[in-house]
Length: 145
Image 1 (cartoon, rainbow, N blue to C red):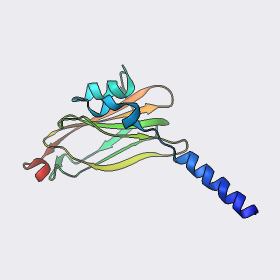
Image 2 (image 1 turned 135 degrees about the vertical axis):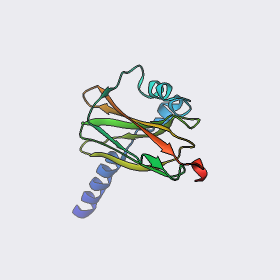
Image 3 (image 1 turned 120 degrees about the horizontal axis):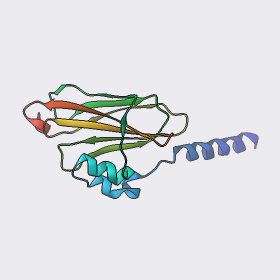
Image 4 (image 1 turned 180 degrees about the vertical axis):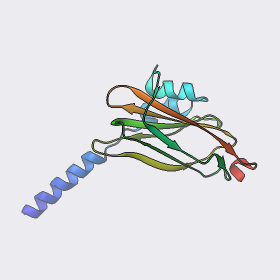
């Protein structure tokens, strides 16, 4: 009986820690915004992000616009990290809620149909917003590359 109670408590704790913000449901306009400033405003409101300790990595030249490796990392205590791009019809790529005690270090592959830029915005627990922008070229062929 003791093991069963412990197991139920563990499952309840895991469920609570896995709850995530559904940004698509809570901020739907961020997902249909056609440019980065509009997407940032739809997600976070009228903010002015400052340069901070945000590490954004992607290749300078992507040989395949259909699968560009991108990573974003910060040591800033963060509530969320959002990634945007400025060439596809919708600018918001991804938004990650950062649970307490979690390291903010994410990698993904994104699609860009042509050369442009990627912007990462970190929402700090201090109420400030930090950003990093990176330009890259997509080799001829774009998403079909």
